[in-house]
Image 1 (cartoon, rainbow over the protein chains, first blue to last red):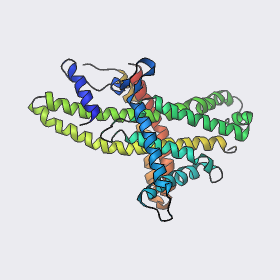
Image 2: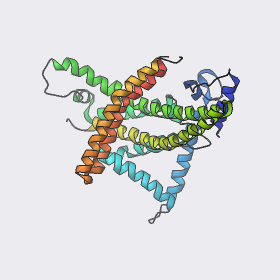
Image 3: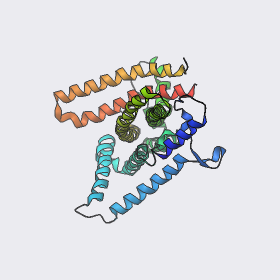
Amino acid sequence: MSLSLVGLALASEGESEGFHAPSPEEFYWPIFGSGDWTFTRPMLMMALSVLILGVLLVTLTKKAAIVPGKGQWMVEQAYDFVRNGIARDIIGSKDFLKYTPLLFSLFTLILLNNLFGIIPPIQYPTMSRIGFPIALTLIVYAVYHIAGMRRKGVGHYLSGMIPKGLPKPIYALIIPLEYATYFIIRPLTLALRLFGNMFAGHMLLLLFIMGGEYMLLHGGPGLKVVSVGSFLMALIFTAFEALIQFLQAYIFTLLAATYISDAISEEH
Amino acid sequence: MQGNIAILGYGLSAIGPGIGIGLIFAAFINGVARQPEARGMLQGIAILGFALAEALAIFGLVLAFVFR
């Protein structure tokens, strides 16, 4: 069916008899190099996605017409969705223009890389390797802390995270909790959510397709019939994955906007 | 029987978010049914709540593979 599946089928045939459930090792795809400096398949896809997005966005908006063509209309819809639907609604009409380019880049990059998971010749979501969500999260992390510190000053920014007017003993509990939320839990969940969803989704597809392949090629007559059900489930989940992949790109951008808005807004 | 008991931990960690996400979307549907014009505003809030509640299940999934 696709490159990845052929590779997996060959890998599983080389081993002993019996079905091997997909495992996290199947996400490791070195192309060349070795050790820490291996150039892997997701790296190639990330570079490819940047190239595709750059070429697409520049060519489609180069000759911007008052009456937009098909391509220009699509880009404008996507930009409008991020600018008005996410940035302006969350950050507020005063400051949102400054952060719209970041949010638009995040959204398009994540969306394309997620969609790679179901586009046939590629079929591998880049974000199912933890390094890529972490890199994106680090950018967001730096942006919202620095934006908050520049807006309010470092001391005021840090003290602004703690709610005022609580009974004294409660603060012993609240202060570590609030700081853990802002500095550890928020970036951690932001990266893990994207990674976990892409990882689990790809794993699910692998399980259904590899299971179907095994039952069809190596199973008895009864199992051959059942394998149709497995392939059908793979198809259904591919459609479901498309929804999840869009939703995760949206959620990552939405949360990034929320964190920025939290950092630069005045005391609540 | 073979397998990894850490996966049971994922099953357990999915219970809470499952209930939570159900509650969030129940409230969302209620809100839209009562006031259909508020849909656009409620949708963003519902998805935000969904993303926050889902994080626990994702932790469970990731940790199930980390502690093998």
